[in-house]
Image (cartoon, rainbow, N blue to C red; front, side, top):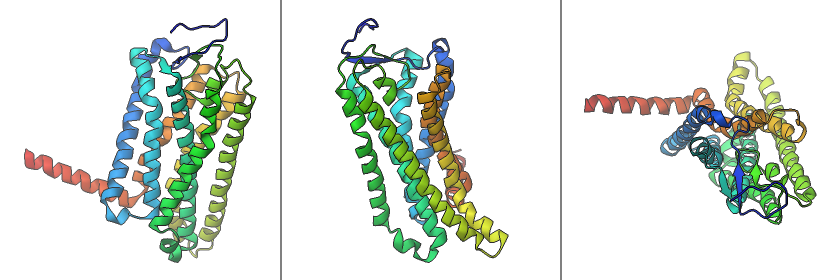
Length: 320
């Protein structure tokens, strides 16, 4: 459909720009994005397969890791296929309702992932501060309920965002200066009063970020106190090393999302390509890094990977 700029209208589709100002380089830009997406899919599917097939990994930490892998697969797949469609085929159109659905998936699953990080922090707290009660506190049913609670929270918190946008019927343009249907990127195109959407989006964003960060920070304060009470430096390092994967995953998730949010609202002098790159990276970097970090830092996963590689080598030699 034609793009209108001079008058408000009611669009049936939106047009995503991909990476603005870099349209001529879209094919080249697609190479790292496609590579990272494939790594994310293969890495997280491998984590899910390993946890499912290895009975020794049927513990709270790895169940939460599996939840994280599922969320990362959904988050990366909610944007990358469409982005690659734009890069390769210049297919920029997305239906109005499809755009709202993508908005819901992106923001709700980002909220779910934040909740899972809180749950993983609680798991580390119990494992280090109350190791003898770890299995009795975090039973399989409790872990399942925590995962369900994180999911319901994400759905309930984020559902109003697309519902509020659905009420807007008139827009200045249907061109979204973004590579996906980010909430404020869509809302700012409306001709109508967007104050409720703006206030709700900011409130939920800061509520999730601040509360979850406080919960994680509090858990690590208690963990640090427990670690420092250990008798030897070797014991302290060995105990705290069980938290390093979680800390790396948290930093990979929260830092890009905080910087992207701040730039979107306050960094008006930042060039659009830089902002869009960062907005895509915060949805793609955690799915890429999380499997790598946990594979590198977790001996149980390393052993299972080594078994898989050895088995496949043996099969290849046998076939030869």
